Amino acid sequence: MGDERPYPDHGYTTPKDWSTVPPRQVRLDELVTTKATLDLRSLLSEDSTFYGDLFAHVVQWRGVLYLEDGLHRALRTALQQRNILHARVLEI
Image: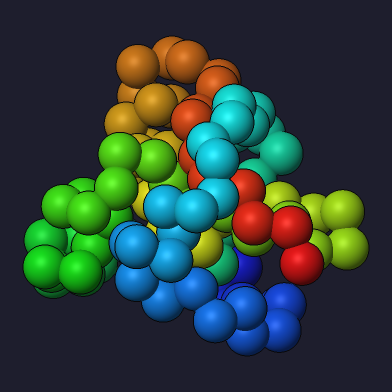
């Protein structure tokens, strides 16, 4: 678990940007979070993937998968005792 983005800025800021990245399955145990806490305000904000995208957003950088957005989806997946998350994975 991390609390920052260790990878360079990728320029994908809106759900429309991310919609060009095809979703795929990722194992929860392969993900490193970029947020240490789940903030309810950001979870419910209008530009959150909660409203704009069905899939979590993951950045693959130097072989590591970083969960950039979708911590709430990953948590829900874990609580349902599943180990696969559907996510858009941006490789940089």
